[in-house]
Image 1 (cartoon, helix red, strand yellow):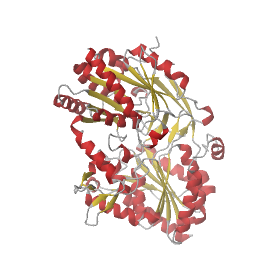
Image 2: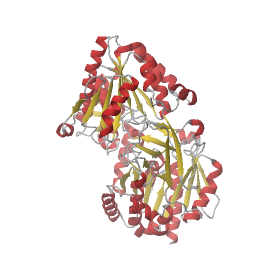
Image 3: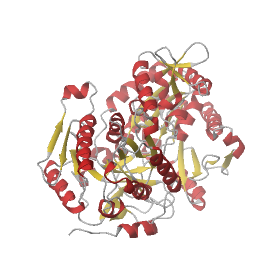
Image 4: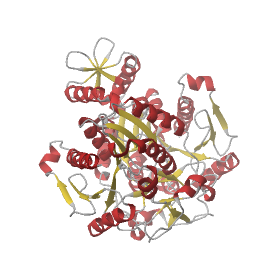
Amino acid sequence: MACKGIDPDTYFDQNRAPANLQQAHDAVAAFLARLPRDQPIVLVTSGGTTVPLENNTVRFVDNFSAGTRGSASAEQFLELGYAVVFLHREHSLQPFSRHYSHGPEGVLDYLEPDGAGGVRVKAAYAPRMLADLERARAHAASLLQVSFTTLSDYLFLLREVSLLLAPTGPRSMFYLAAAVSDFFIPSHSMAEHKIQSGGGDLTLHMNQVPKFLRPLVKNWAPACFVVSFKLETDQQLLAPKAKHALDKYGHHVVVANLLHTRKWQVWLVTRDRDPYLLEISQDQLRRGHDIEQDIVAELARRHREYSSAE
Amino acid sequence: MACKGIDPDTYFDQNRAPANLQQAHDAVAAFLARLPRDQPIVLVTSGGTTVPLENNTVRFVDNFSAGTRGSASAEQFLELGYAVVFLHREHSLQPFSRHYSHGPEGVLDYLEPDGAGGVRVKAAYAPRMLADLERARAHAASLLQVSFTTLSDYLFLLREVSLLLAPTGPRSMFYLAAAVSDFFIPSHSMAEHKIQSGGGDLTLHMNQVPKFLRPLVKNWAPACFVVSFKLETDQQLLAPKAKHALDKYGHHVVVANLLHTRKWQVWLVTRDRDPYLLEISQDQLRRGHDIEQDIVAELARRHREYSSAE
């Protein structure tokens, strides 16, 4: 069994909890308490985590992710009636506003003076923005946003939210789309100040991040429906690694995808069936169809099966 | 002389130019050709560069910078009559829209339906947005934006723009506020695919990035007025490192600042004078006064002296 690196509990002992942990706990608890009893729940994680190289952080290792998949998926879950806890990287894409925040244009490019001292959205953008604004408002009561930056923030928040979701059992899905670092520099071996560049080359030793899917599935939220993601660049590794993860962690589905085709092709991998291919055409893609619609619809279907079988 | 690592020319031979290089060249050349002959010019660089750890990039080392200093400074240069080439990290803060793009609120939080099928900016935000919109429009002809992501993109674009600015001589200022990586992984020794985490710990060997300020000042744009930035976390190192850089590269000013006080305290360091402290009060800061107003005003003054002395 390849179980290298430190124990998850040791990780929490050796790292500092994020400043927003208690606030996030209270917000999630209050959010869950307000939900109708039969509303399905999903925790969507989104965006990449950072690993600081210095305690006074100037440099960090980051994972590529704008939060496209997570934010688009959160919208779809809301449309299907889910309550969504959206645990996302600060400044990454968010549901409903995602089309407007990372475009080549700045915010102001959508706007113009209305001639009467106010500002309005240009006519070319208004219909779509109006639709997104109305969808955002319609779903506001079913969406809770919590943000993280570092790997450590993310892991503390993931554990906290998992423990709060645990009592909801099969009613809750975990949709772990965040791009989480595999390696980290333990806080005690980190440089205190900015690493100086005068000394020539730099060698960084990083430890493997403990596999948190294991305690999540076994201890934190054992009755919930858990979906993890696997992004690779080498197609040969994709299916074997997905199957291996399912065997190792005992969760329910791996959404497997390749870096360069991820916007139109994913496989849902489960232990007992062949990988289930979801694919959209280039034409659908151009017309603005997000593959997340298909992913989320299929997972919601499987989640319903799972909860009604309990 | 501490001149470790490879030669800048070798770097350009061993790395690939960014896809937007020719387009950026043409845009900058056309922009410069359109300017009134007596308008001062500044190249403002802004945001952090990334260093990919893999050729098919999933992970990268990043430098902390939202682009706050660069975007605020670009606004100030425009207000003082400069033409600005704004070479910035993709999705980092931009002049005039900077107050709206990285806030806790998404774009949609500023907006509401106008009740007649359109969308308007909420009354609480409208006056400030209107003012920023009008400033952006007033200065549109004097602002050219060029974007980068990786260290390599940045260096190729910096050289290209420098060579285009060179003929303008003392009329042009370089305001190098971008947070540029000090270490990189040469393309030929990078992993082809996503680094696998099954094998335990990870050791990264990074080379020191060649000091590009040297060829910039000596060869690319020798008659221009060059301002570099130094960010440290350790106050003891700040002044000596700034003086050392001036001696080594032969440029004109170092703007020196500390990570945790950079929003209200900077020193302008030159070879022949004591460091010149610029400082604003916490009260000014709260009332929205940007220290970049003071930095840019003082540098513009020195730039005028420099150009009239030629």
